[in-house]
Length: 209
Ligand code: HEC
Ligand code: HEC
Ligand code: HEC
Ligand code: HEC
Ligand code: HEC
Image (tube, rainbow, N blue to C red; front, side):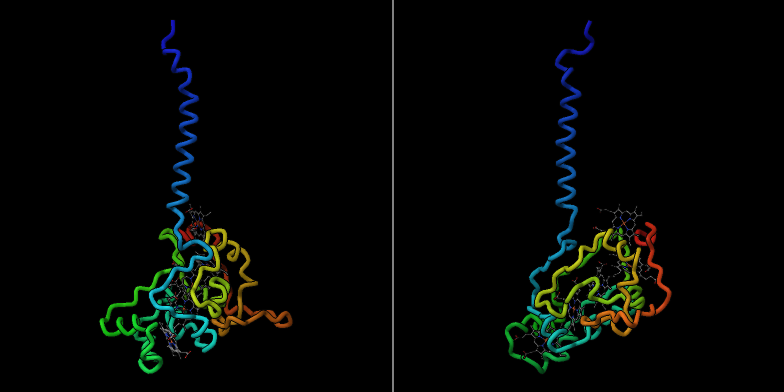
């Protein structure tokens, strides 16, 4: 006597195939929706003002810290307020159409809606000041910003990328006063003396707190 109808013989196969399809859709969906655009190398969104790092940091040679003033002191590097731009642009190019949104922000008091490029997921902890004070240069993580008219993400910012350096930070360390110098190259004759003893975390709780 048959307890289950014959048609149920196919059930395990249907479940297996259906499960595989569903699994594929779920993984694909997580991958598609779960990977934020801003964690992709090359992500370079259009900004509300055509501000150029190549002009200001490259040609004019402004130090990164003039605008990203918090980078040595706190976790966040900070995007400069409109006031920082107006230090010069209340005198320079005052009738430029490209600067109209800057003047509008200055008059209204509303910040310029810059589009964020680099952002880690909330479950990963990152602090700029620790890295900069250990002697890791901006260029190691952001590339040649001083040559970019539009900022684009240069490195993957993935977990394995963080760990590659944490396991062997030595080649990425430079003298403390060269952290913003995009042209600095190590001199084989003069090995870098680390600013302090440096031990980046490789245990999970170091970055997932
Ligand atoms: C005159 C001010 C100024 C200077 C100098 C400056 N920046 Fe910026 N930076 C900005 C502004 C404004 C933005 C936001 C708009 C954009 O992304 O272009 C920005 C964005 C960035 C971003 C992307 C932030 C994000 O959204 O993820 C990085 C990285 C960066 N700057 C690094 C640097 C480095 C490195 C230097 C020095 C070589 C530097 N900046 C010099 C004003 C400045
Ligand atoms: C230290 C002075 C200084 C600061 C601070 C500064 N700029 Fe400039 N900026 C200049 C100069 C000088 C030029 C013009 C260069 C030239 O004549 O080609 C310029 C050009 C520009 C232009 C191109 C204007 C045009 O008509 O082509 C834009 C856009 C601009 N800056 C945006 C900004 C923004 C946004 C900030 C703030 C994050 C800022 N600047 C901060 C000095 C400065
Ligand atoms: C060890 C790698 C590393 C170094 C060195 C580094 N950054 Fe970053 N930067 C990042 C990461 C990762 C983010 C995204 C942080 C987040 O989402 O919490 C970021 C974000 C930023 C942002 C966006 C705003 C913010 O504060 O998060 C700016 C601006 C910036 N960096 C500028 C700089 C400048 C200027 C320097 C050099 C003085 C520098 N960075 C050095 C990895 C680095
Ligand atoms: C180019 C090298 C380099 C890269 C890339 C890098 N780090 Fe680090 N990290 C260091 C160094 C050097 C230190 C300093 C260790 C010390 O002070 O002993 C450090 C320290 C840290 C610390 C411990 C300090 C603290 O704030 O508690 C954390 C957390 C950290 N890094 C997170 C990250 C994350 C997350 C990423 C990737 C998004 C990353 N790092 C990418 C070199 C790097
Ligand atoms: C040096 C910093 C660092 C250390 C150490 C670290 N992680 Fe991560 N981890 C990250 C960063 C940054 C991300 C986000 C990267 C991304 O979204 O691409 C991440 C993402 C993850 C994710 C989410 C993966 C995803 O696709 O979103 C998991 C799970 C994870 N880490 C587990 C671990 C475990 C387990 C350990 C210990 C064996 C560990 N991490 C150690 C930095 C670190």
